[in-house]
Structure formats: C-alpha cells, structure tokens
Amino acid sequence: MGLSTHVLDTMHGCPAAGMAVALYTTDGEQATLVKQFTLNADGRNPDGPLYDNASLKAGTYRLVFDVQGYFAQRGVPLPEPQFLNRVSIDFGVAHTDQHYHVPLLVSPWSYSTYRGS
View 1 (cartoon, helix red, strand yellow):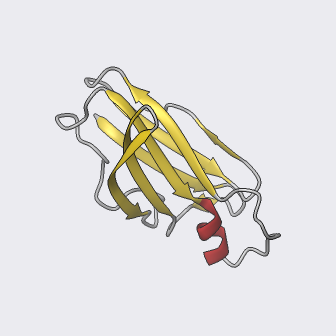
View 2 (cartoon, rainbow, N blue to C red):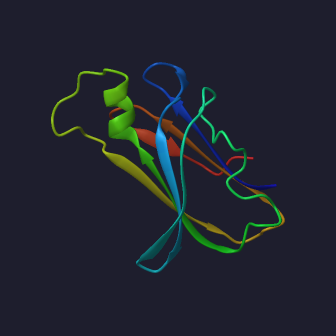
View 3 (cartoon, helix red, strand yellow):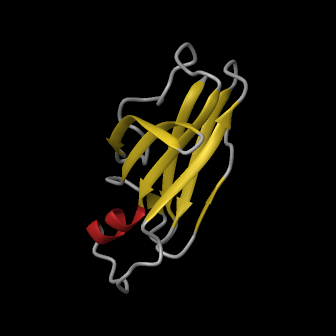
C-alpha cells in the first residue's frame, strides 16, 4: 500500500538507474517539495515506497523526473535543446487504503504513464 514509482528507459531497455526524481504535494498552483531521490539499479526509490499506507493522504501530488539529465549522463547524443527536459506528472490520490503506483516509461522523445498496481 502507499505510493511508489518505477522508471524504465525504453531506449536502452532497462531500468532508469541514476535518474533524479522529486516528489511534491500540490494545492492549485502551489507545490511543496516532499523529497528528492535518485533511482536505484532497479529504477526505483532506494528507500522503498514514497509514502507508506499510514502516511499517504488524499490529495494531489506531482512527480518530476529529470529525463534530460538522465540521458545526458548516459552519453546519448541529442540535439540542443533536448526534446524532453523534465517530465512532470500531476496525479490525485482519492483512496488512501489503496496502493498508488506511478510508473514512467521514457525515451528521449516520448513517455507514458498509468496507474499501476
């Protein structure tokens, strides 16, 4: 239960190890940083869930993924400016008794997400 994320690099076919991610709570246009972390070798937060079930509150959140920094770190030759810089996903949590998983599938030119389990 709680909130988690996972990032897969679809260009290289592997987890996005080393990508920087930031989690925010949001209230309209206002965003408050909750935590920043770097994805581990499995493309996940090294500390486990972003929120456990007891800590997750109903409300709106934002995950920001540093896609440009990640692919630059991997040495991918890309035009300047790069097509994707940071991918920001705004989402809502309505049921704190359920698990919210926010995966990101990303390449330098595209991304997709969904509510996982």
